[in-house]
Each structure stands twice: as C-alpha cells, then as structure tokens.
Length: 446
Ligand SMILES: [Zn+2]
Image 1 (cartoon, rainbow, N blue to C red):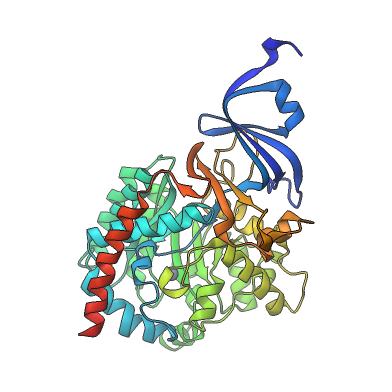
Image 2 (image 1 turned 135 degrees about the vertical axis):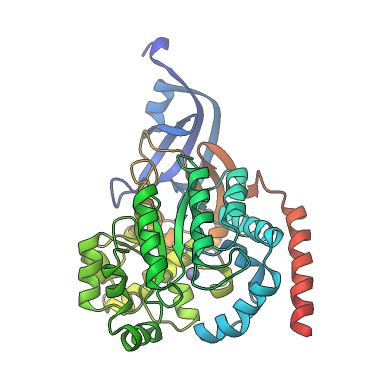
C-alpha cells in the first residue's frame, strides 16, 4: 500500500466488539468505525483500517461493544419532573387525579425546557441518540433538542379540549403546522402530529390531522388500544374498535405510529399490516399501569414494524432504553409462550433499525453501515455484571443496563465521553430540577 491510498478522516473508533444491526444477527470483533463529518465512511477490521485511513482522533474501546444509537420512539420528556410523584395507580385514576391536575398547575415554557433537558441527560447517558416526544410547547422541545445536538421527533399535541398550549383543536393544528414548517428538512428535528388518543380527539380534528400529514409529509403518532377500557368504551360509544375508526378516518398508514396496542384482535393485526402502520411497544409503562401486554412476537411475525419506547418517566419510571429492551424481550416470551420469541438480536433491532424505519429514516439511521449518519454508542462490558463475555448481544439485552454506556456520538459529534455528558451542564440542571421538585412537593402538601 502506498501513501496516496490512505484517506484522511475525522474519527476512528476501535471496537472490541461491534454489532452493526445490518446484517442482522452478527457480532464482529476488532473492528474500526471511521467517521468523516456527520457520517460513517467505513466499518472494517482494524488491521485493514491501519492501511486505509488516517484520522485526527482515535478512540480505543478495548472492553466495549459498539452499536448504533438507540431510538426511543415514545415519551413525554418533560414528565421526568413528575417522576415518582404518583405511583401504583391505574391509568385513568393516574391521569385524572394526579397527572392532569399537576400539568394544569405547573406546565410552562420553563418547566418544559428544564424537564426536557433532564430527560435528554438521562437518555444520552443510557444510550439513546434519537427520541420522540409528545408534550406541550413542542417548539421549546425542538429548540432544546436541537441545541443539545440530539435527534428528536417532536409531536405537537392535539386534543379536543383546551390546555396551557392552546384553546382547542384549531389552535393546536395551526401552531403545529407552524412547527412543521419551521423545522422541515432539519437533520436533527422531525416535527410530527400527536393526536393524544382516540378517546380525547374527535373525528373532525383527526381528519384535519390526516390532511396536515398528507400536505406536509409529517408523521402521526397516537396512543392506541392502551387499555381494555379504551376498546370497550369505543365499542359502546362508536360501535367499533378505536383502530377501525382510525382506519375509516384515514389515520392509519406508513407514516403512522400506534403507541401501546396492548389489545389486539386478528382484524386489528390485518389493519396494521395492510396499512403499513408502525407499532411502538412500551412494555414497562403497560406493566406499571396494568394496561395489558402488546403481543410483540405476533406483530413481528405478521410483518408489522415494531419499535420501542419508554413512555414518560412518570409511568415507567426511567428512560433507560436498555431496561426497556430487556423487559420487552422477557415479556414477549411469556406472551408468546415461546422462549425463542424476541431474541436478543431482534430486541436490539427493534430499538435501532425498526425505530429508524418508523421515522422513515432507515436509509440513514439505525445501523452501522458506511454512508449512514454517525449516531453511535459504546457500552463497557468489563464490569462484573457483564462478565464473562460469551455473547455481547446477550449481555446488552439480558445483563446490561444503560449506565454501562460510556460513549455516544450523534452526527459524529461526541455527546458522552467516558460516561460524562459533553453538552449539558448537569450541576446547573440539577439545581433547576430541585427548584421544581420543591414547588411540586409544596403543592402535594397543601
Ligand atoms: Zn404516552
């Protein structure tokens, strides 16, 4: 090899193990990932990289597994400030008596900014590089994520009733369209439409949401079939299952993400499969609120794209997607009565490439392949809880938790280095969080 065949690049990551996600189900050893600008230019054995690339920076990860950044496809980021405030309650009591009153009292632009930053700090430290949000003041969330250099699908809320963010559906839709227009074509921020649920949004606004999606290309994310009550209530009031109603209104399609889906009939599966709608599985929230369990394995076998999310920290109560992956893999086996259901490699794909597919960005996110964006994480397996190592994929799903994440890059920019956040001032953030906690505790005491 002569010198003129050597290519200059920015960053080289030397990985003991590498799980590229594509091709599916493989673990590579002693690999180098080469980054130039925002993209991966090569994934190749270290010995070959020595001959082909010269980089200005090399990161040695001798005890680590390197993989694509995780995609947390459903949450309410700023609800992190309500973490642990009301537990051990069923969904409607939890919402009506605790969450909605607290939201009415505390939600403001500053609450959203501080809560979103708290959520992003936790997600970054536990391996998430892309998240989806559905909450109030989405323009603040979009700006916070962009400033932090974190990728985010930001769904503006759509409900029949007034909230702190708007007087009703028409105002939500007009503010939402402005949000979409101000972020379209941004690499980090994907504005989207967030009708809350079939029982909180009537036919008129849902039809307008579909029209807005068709006009702008924005995706739709909706809580759907979260509980048995939601389905029986829909049958009583509308004479049909909520998903049937959505299908008739044109809501289901390749740009639609249905969150939860714990109640699923064979006809529901056919509707999802035929329309190309995606399902976002949130097993820990479903377990904690006793909502039911999504049949992950059955959906995947039916060809439906399954992604994963933590939901908000008030119903989980953490945003560690590795924990969610483990729960998903465990629960899938019991629900399918099959220990082979949702294997370790499948679970990792759900949290990466499948999330990218639901966002319509699987051509550039979700796997470590030359040409894709450099959204990469590294997990240290040298701790006692991940020793010895026979199969890194097994450890990532069954033994690991997100706190073993030591490095992450988004668009080639370091976000976590040796376990420390590079772009969020954590001590300053903790002061602001404690300020909110004091106010919320005071209100609870009154
Ligand atoms: Zn939710």
